[in-house]
Image (cartoon, rainbow, N blue to C red; front, top):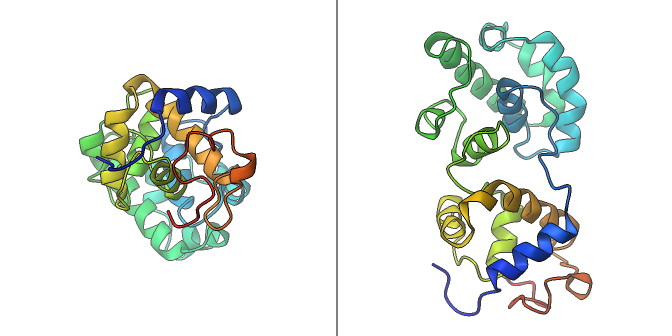
Length: 215
């Protein structure tokens, strides 16, 4: 658990909900398979860029088997603009091969099973579960969520799994999905990595890191 000053969780969540009433997943998808692929593509890439690539991608690959059986080089070319395309294509093919062969072509809605798939860690699994109407294993922790949480004093960790464990203890389970989206938006729009907009932040009066950039 974090040490030192800590922003009041309930009050911060109330303010975040008021500031971001429409907070939701910004990736475009129609089903869990599309969400899984989009989330893999979003690593080291903006959601906006992913959303530019996926309409054509999803029209071309309609099933897990389609991705798994994509000829060498084809899937890589289709996702090239998202960056790190070789590794992403390998993970998509690998995960979809398992889904097609062992799960009837359907993405398994179980945390313990999801994290055994190639390229699927807890963050991606929580995104898939939480945005498909299932109970996630915890709060989605990306770079924004980790940074904002450390500045608020909700965690002292850098490791995403440990950050998630701290947030899961602090944030009510029914708020895990929404809070994740809100913290991501706050990190993108206000609590920037290098130059946080503390003078404009609606959490500044309760944030122990307000005015500092060393967290």
